[in-house]
Every structure is written in C-alpha cells, then in structure tokens.
Amino acid sequence: MNLPQATEATQRNTYTALLAGAVVLLVVHTLGRFVYTPLLPYFISDGMLTTGQGAAIATWNYLGYLLGALLAVRWHSISRIRVMLPLALLIHTLTTLAQTQLEQPTALGLTRCLNGIANGIVFVQAPALVLEWLVTRGRASLSGLVYLGVGVGLLLSSALVSTTSGWLDGPARWWPAALVSLPLVWWGSRQLIRLDVPASPPSSSGRGAPEKTLLTRTSLPLFLSYAGAGLGYILPMTFLPLLASLSLPQGHWLTSGSWLIVALATIPSAWLWNHLGSRLGDLPALRLNFLLQLTGVLAAVFVSGPGGIICCGLLVGGTFLGTVLLTQRIGRALQPHQGPRLSAALVALYGLAQIAGPWLTKQWLSSGGSLGEAFGIGAAALVFGLVFSLLIKPPAAN
Image 1: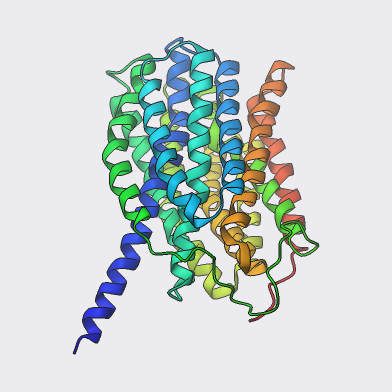
Image 2 (image 1 turned 30 degrees about the vertical axis):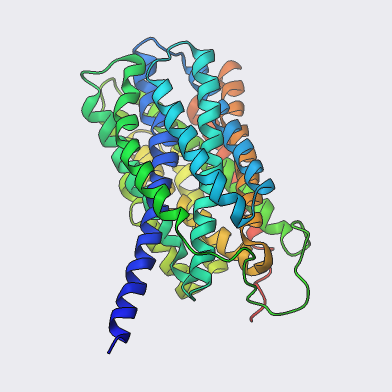
C-alpha cells in the first residue's frame, strides 16, 4: 500500500537533487562565467575595455577557475564539500554584485579571478555530490542531467544581456545576472547541503584496496583527452560573438544572435549526450562528441560569413557539455573509489587548458593575426583530444 508513495517520494527527491545541482551550475557557470561572452562586445563598444583587455580579463577568470578546481582536489571529502560549497556560492554572489561597480580593468580582472575560484569549486563539488548521492541509489545514469542547468543558463544569460542592452551601460550591464542569481543561490545551496551522502564513496568494483593514484596508465589518456577538450572549446565559447562582430557587417544579428544559437543548442545537449552515453556507451559517445565539436570549430576557421558562425555555434554549443558529463562518468568508472577527487582533478586540468586559450589568442592578436585564425588553435587542441580519446581503454565490466 505504501510502496507507490515511497517510489513517488524517491523520484521526487531524485529530481529535486538534480534540479538543485542544475540551478547552482546555472548560476556560477553561466550567470557568473559565460555571461561575460555576450557582454564583452558591449563593454568594448562602451569604451570600457579593449579587445586585448577583454581577453586578459577572461584569462583571469579562467585562472580563478583553475585555482578553484585545485582547491576542490584538496578538499574533496564529503564533509569538506558541505562547508566549501555554500562558501563558494557566497563568494560568487558577492563578486557578482561587486562587478556592477567596477570599470577599471585591473580591479575587474581580480574580481573575475575570485568569481572564477568560486565557479571552479562549485562546478566540481555540486555535480560530484549529486553523482555520489545518485550512485548510492543506483541512479548514476541520470547524473548527466545536472548539466541541463548550463544549457538553460546560456539561454537566460543571452536574454538578460540582449533585452537590457539598450538601457544599461558599462558595469551596470552586470546587474540583471546579479539579481537573478540571488534567489537561485539561496534555494540551490539549501537543497544540496541536505543530501544524505556517505562519507566514503561506495566502490562498484569490489576488487581489493582503493586506488590512491590519480594518474595511471589507464587514466592518463583520459586526462590528456580532456585537456584537449578544455583548450578546444574555450575559444568559441569566449570569442564567438566578438568574432561575429569583427567579421560581419555592423549591426548584423549574429553579433548577439550567435550566443543565442549556442544557448539553444546547449539546452538539449546534456539530455542528448546522457542518452547517447547510455545507448552507445560513454566512450564511443565521447569520440563522436569530439568529431562534431571539431567540425564546429573548423567551420569558424574555414567557412566565411554567417554560415561558419552558425555552424560553430550549433556544434560547439551542442557538444561541450557532453564532453564534460561523459568524461566525468568514464573517470569514475575507471577509479570508482575516488569519484569527487577524480572529478576535481579532471576539472583542474580542464581549467588549466582553458587558461591557455585566451592567452594564446591575445598573443596572436598582438602579433597581427586575426581572431578567426586564432580559432585554429582550438581545432588543433580538439584533434589532440580526439586522438587520446581513441587510446582510452574501456572500463572493466563489474
């Protein structure tokens, strides 16, 4: 008699946990991080930043993201996550509010670095906490759905920027994202901290003592593949609207519309790659993901006009979350004893690769190269990632 009610309650708890994880990722990764992408052309047209300063500030944010992920490697236990996760969300909120008052590039860069630290911690710890909670309930296959928040957040960030662009100016352009973040942070953090997760993640292998080393012959190709993905995707995700503004006629709809295309492509991508990983296997799905993402970046390099921008937005927007969720699941299958720690190490490496993207772009532009040509760096990185994905050995069957 009570079984249907128990099942219904279990499902409700599962979707609440997934929604809470999705909400905090929406806040830190899109309203905190990627909202900068559609804002950057406006900051440049406002005279607040130059293209070089914009790239430098992006690099500061990515450096913070790396530092945050490294902190998450150090503080990977469930007990530490319960302390660090709400603290990181508080830092995100405070730095987002501070950005509304900052116009000087150095101060903005330092604030974006702190914002990136919070982002790195949350992007590691929230999905890891939800994944471990799902594993204890035999629902790990749903874990990729937590990244739906990033897709919805990209659309939300695009709408917030475009609808307020005519009546906000300079640092005030940060206000819409800041105001929307406040209630979402409050609700999402409360739900996540309530999750009942054992202090030691369960092992699905049942074979011997837990592996202590992160980098092994089995896991190294996965780490190198993920590094290529980090450098490969970050150029279009940072500079695609700017590329549209520089390569298309003034006022072209793709100056802001390119980010909308990315956002729309991202919304179903977490569900799609979660489904493909379940149907094809996570490893074959990852290799397909690299191929499609590479095609998108090559389109921006070799296809002139709106076609290249649209193709890049669709294919990169529709794949980059898949790279994340598939790699995280493959990593945990390879080393099930240290899920949160492995997740943090992967994100740290991803963050390190991302720092190189804006920095290399700045150097290329300073030497007289074009932004479109700089996208070739991303294409080469994705080839690197694809090659190493072919060297990953499938996790042993349990």
